[in-house]
Amino acid sequence: MTQKPHPADAGSSAVSAVDQEKPSLWEPATRFYRRLHVAALGLLIVVLTIYLLREFAVILQQVAIAGFLVYLILPVQRWLLRRGMPLLPAYVVILLMASGLAFGLGFLIYSNFQDLLQKAPTYRANFEDMTQELEAQIPDWLYQAIFRTVIEQARDAEQNVERLGAMVGRVLGIVPYLLLVAIYLVFLLWELSGTNERIERAFGPERSHAVQAVIRNASDLIERYISVKTLVSLLIGALTTIALFLFGVDYPVLWGILTFLLNFIPYLGSFIAVALPTLLALVQMRSLATALAVVVVLTILQNIVALIVEPLVAGHRLNLSPLLILVALAFWFSIWGIIGMILAVPLLVVVKSVLASIEETRWLALLMSKNNE
Image 1: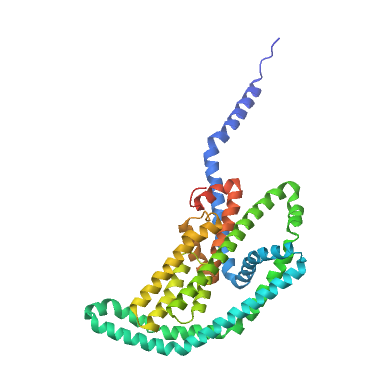
Image 2 (image 1 turned 180 degrees about the horizontal axis):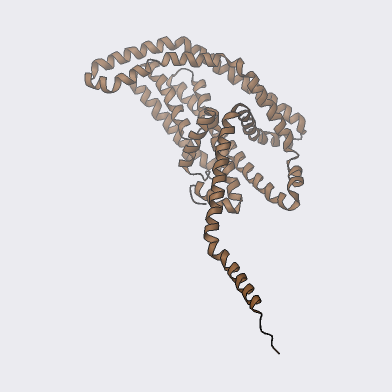
């Protein structure tokens, strides 16, 4: 005999059916508010991160520079270990070599700038003569409209060089800064050996493999980028030195060193590395033809290295949007200055690698890429 359902049971089943339908009806709104919540938290994290980067700029810069140097040291460390040298003596040898190289380059740059200060009046006199000759050869309206502003700005070059020379002269003031960078570097190298064990204890045996894969991928990309960029920068610095020496431009070694450093700044660094020695060639030799020849040769060398040599050495370029690189350069320059511009691309590589390794944020990594890969 079949039993009829009780009216109360029917009512409760109807309520449960309605309750089961509610999530499907409210799901779009719930999903929207969830995304809005995530976006608000993300914006808050970004603002807080920018504040902390500005507030603790000195400490974070030192740690970031030390991390940058770690990736320069790792290939040398592996080479020494393959030759049978123990780990601790290898680190000692590397630090001694780095200290000697930094001291030698610092002394060379300082001595060159001191000599440049002594020759600055001669360069200014040559510039004054050139402007007077130019003023006599062009119409007055053209001089007033275009060249006068440029010339007035250029006449302050001697004062700017004096300020730069004073900054270089205070090199002893950055010794504590460099000492802290060296201390951070030693501890970072020391901590590398136990990183995998700490990750396994922190995340467990299952999740630790995924975390280690993300860190390994980001580290490989940064190490490849820094190694290739260092080799390419050495090449363009050496070629710039040779070219300027052949042209007879003063301080070719100094310009080669500056070209090496500026080449770590994408796009803008190459422009500055060409513009500065070209201006010196103009005021030194008082020849527009020589200055044009210098700028043409240096530009050709920059393009050959950037478009032919670097892809051959790297195997492939970083898959990053050029617009994103420019934005990153402007962002880090506003926070950390020149140091931020040098570190902008490695930091961008880390962010993109981490985002690409997480399923929920992989779409952001695709938006950051150049070839949608």
